[in-house]
Length: 387
Figure 1 (cartoon, rainbow, N blue to C red):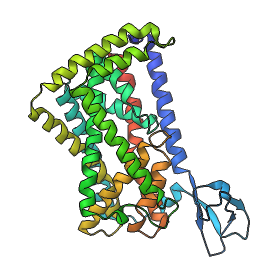
Figure 2 (figure 1 turned 90 degrees about the vertical axis):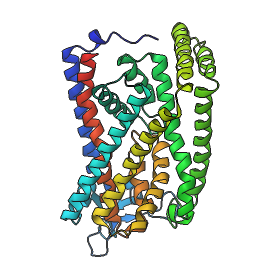
Figure 3 (figure 1 turned 30 degrees about the horizontal axis):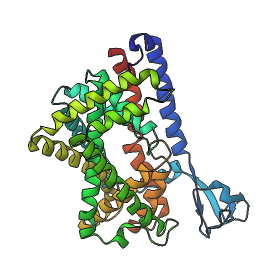
């Protein structure tokens, strides 16, 4: 399972080409997001479109342009995301909270870097950890939510001189810990917050959200259990799975490398199994810090523009578990589109203004998603040039 010849594949001109193309793609994604059209209902005579329920759900889908047809006497008109942001009521409190949101994103990545250093037993420096996490996030931003950047993460760790088998085991452990945080925190959330508060009511999502949520919870629980058993009790399962998978004709020529990788995973799993509880406590503590910082980004953004009580913050944190689920099952890169829509639906309890929630959803993605496209584009050529 050897990789490509990096020095020949990424010469100076190719690196600069990748940089230009990457920045161009990030700019294109940002441009599309800021110019995405939402329809709003008006009663001041400025309407330019009328609504037609083409999907027969008896609900106005403001983000579906095909449901609106030009009509000078209509009661709806288009509005871009840029216009929504321009109408946000800015204040010093808002600016402070946005700065706080950015700091939470930095804290999230620092916690991820700390965790990867722990799991590699400090084989990675802080600088190397930065490269790994930024490129991992870059890959996740480009991949659909259902795919994430796990495969790319294995390659990145391997290029940082971590054996491929150990890289694979580390990525499996991070996935296990992320899922463990989710399945542990959900019961705790429901001890303090009623389900009727967490799930949207009287929306286009309605009761289907709860069904999808609990179905996904069971799936994540099973995945976490499977990963736990694979690492700590039956690491040979991964080796056998790779052996069977690479029997396929299109993969057969890499079968020897796959079996070696499976053997390395098995050996690494034995090393992990012998680690003291303190090792795992630190790694999971880093996971808690990273996810908590990630969730607090939305809390900070909402606090800048909406009056919130102390316990409202707990409701917002709880709702983000539902939001995160939609991003995980999204077929779009980085959950784009799905994330913004789910944000507006789930946070509707905190503001009656669809305009404000739409603008805040865009600000949230500008802080938590688009920076990784730019940073990854800048970091990737430099990292490849070194590796």
